[in-house]
Image (cartoon, rainbow, N blue to C red; front, side):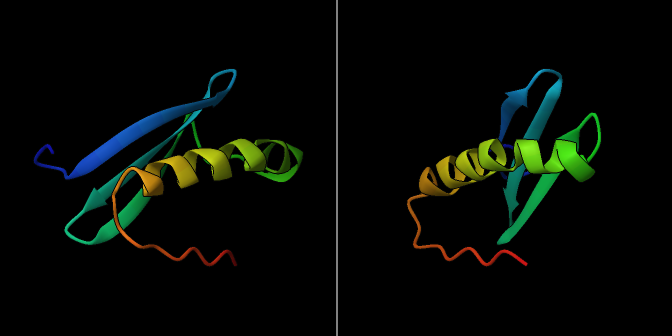
Amino acid sequence: MSAYGYRKTYRLKGRWSVEFILNEGSLDCRWSPRMPTGKLCRSLLPRYRSARNEFLGSLDLTTLVVEL
């Protein structure tokens, strides 16, 4: 772990990627180049979910995901 906690970046599609950061019990998600919207967001959603599930699975913790 770094000074910023446990983090991992996942390439989703083309230039799009998402970084998950777990630091002191808080989970953060950072998009690059920015958070997608509209149709692009819907098209990236399956890849995002897969990356999120992989990240959470790597923590060796019991987790619950609630999507709003």
